[in-house]
Length: 131
Image 1 (cartoon, rainbow, N blue to C red):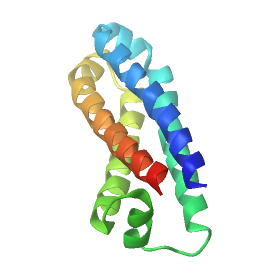
Image 2: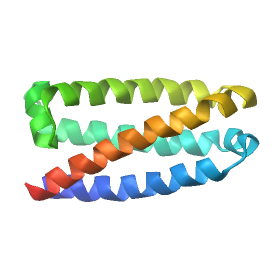
Image 3: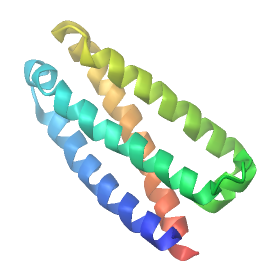
């Protein structure tokens, strides 16, 4: 299971890295026009991560420490990852309906936040590959 999870995450993070770079090269107007595609891409990260965590938990109600250990991080890091993912989800929902000016203002920081999440998922995938 862990090898499959690592492969799935590798593919998604690779796709997301390309997407982030594309979004950074777009004009603010083009970024605004592509918000639907952006929301879809970011939602894929949420969906995959949530499914993988459910599969790892197997209904046992694992603690953050146990789940973090499986993902190659501490319990505190796992808690922060879950909180950061929720903040990212809220942010992308807000950007979906934001004005062009607001997208222009918030997109650089949003893409940085998304890139940090991608980096975290890449590190987790590397850990899962090694187990």
